[in-house]
Each structure stands twice: as C-alpha cells, then as structure tokens.
Length: 150
Length: 147
Image 1 (cartoon, rainbow over the protein chains, first blue to last red):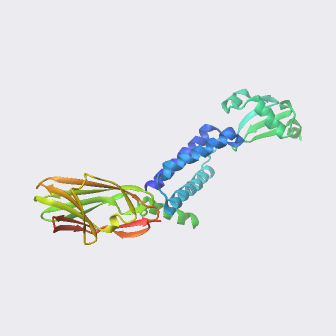
Image 2: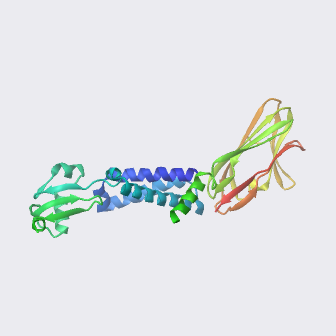
Image 3: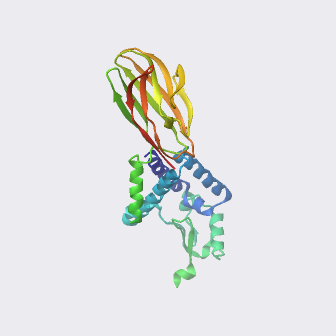
C-alpha cells in the first residue's frame, strides 16, 4: 500500500519539478542538466522504494508511474484547462524580428542562446524571423519573414 | 483491457495485498491476552517491526513467548527490546523468557527485522504464550513474502 502511495507522491513531485525547472533547461541537456536529472532520479528512487529489493515492488512502482502517465496524458487531452498546468503553454520569444525580452527573461533564455537556436535552423539573423515560439517541448520554432509571406 | 489489468494490480497494492501494513492478531484466555502487531505480507529487503503485547489478567510468573521458526527463517533480526532474560530452544521453536508479569499489567516486547532478499514464500509464524512450561494461549499466523 505504502509503495503505491509513495510512487504517486514521487510522480507528482517530479511533474511539479519539471514545471519549475523549466522546459528550456530540460530540453537542452547540458552536462550539468543531465547529471541533475540522474541525481533526481536516484533520490526519488530511494524515497519511493526505500529498502525494497523485490520484483513485486518494481511492478507496483513501475505500474503506478505508467498508470499516472496515462491519467495525466488523458487529463491533458480531455480537459483543455489543465493543459497549461500539465504541459505549459507555447511562448512567443520573437515578434516581427525583435526579441520579446519579457518572455525571454521569464524562461531564462539569453539573446545569445536565441541566436544560436536560430542558427541551428539555418537562420542568420533574428531580424529575419517573423515569429519564434518556445514550444512546450522546450524547442524553439522559427517562422522566417519569407515563410510568413508565402 | 491492459489498463484495467494494471489498475487492478495497483488496487491490490493499495489494499495491502503485497504488504507491508501491520495487522493485529489477538488471542485471549482467563490468565492473559496476547496481541501481535506485525505485517502478514512483506517483500524482500523491507525493514519491519513486530510488537507483542501481553496483558496479564492474573500474575504470570515467567512469561515466555514461543515462536515458530518462520519468525526468523530468512530474516535478519536487528534487535529485540526489552532483552529477554533467557532464550532457549523448545522442540525446534524459539522460546524467549520475558520474566514476571504482575496481574493487571502490560508487557510490550518488540522485534525488529529485515527480510533477506532470498526469502520468498509463506511461513508459519504461530506464537504461544507460556507461563514457564505451561501453555496459556496460542495465536496462529502466516506471513507471505513476495519475491
């Protein structure tokens, strides 16, 4: 019984933590972010399973996490009002070739990181961008002025 | 269908089928009552505690708990408090002498265990309360250790 309840608390805590840490950090996966994720996984595991070495424990915790993933995904699909809470919302970071500094600051993205993301999409200058959107996945989508017109 | 199966498994977990919530078993006689508060379902690796409460209706000169070997088979006994005044073998079972329990008083005795990872299956954990060599009452219990 305790194991299932602890797994529920662990799942909700990790869900909360990913929302707090921010999508950009989690999607960029710098070495520090990767180590942080491994550390969190290890600490959460200790809190949930404690000294349990059993296969039964593995099945219960794995099952709980799997079932909650389905529940959260269904809730996000069925109740649109929950979507911003569960997945977050897309955020506009460039409009008409100009960075939206307030949104960049809120997501802790520097103009240098924005320019680097644009270059990875073969865009030389932010001024060529009509819209750039920080998606809920943490990736930045760019729509150039050229594409916006066509 | 698969989700329903998973939900049923988790419900069984919540309903304590796979442990480890303790349950109370009770036995009563004219001389004394005995309560054992201990899990009946466990999983390998878990720490757990068993609490024995003896309430003496009449004086017990030498209260002795006689435990089935299943209490210690595949278990690591971390500690037992308060320490018994004697530990003996009684026909293959473990006898723990707790001493005198005056009429109207309660004696609580704790055993702290960890389940060894190789310990799997069902084990008899019957408990008898004796006064010296005289049996006073008996409690039948079984513990299930999930792999």
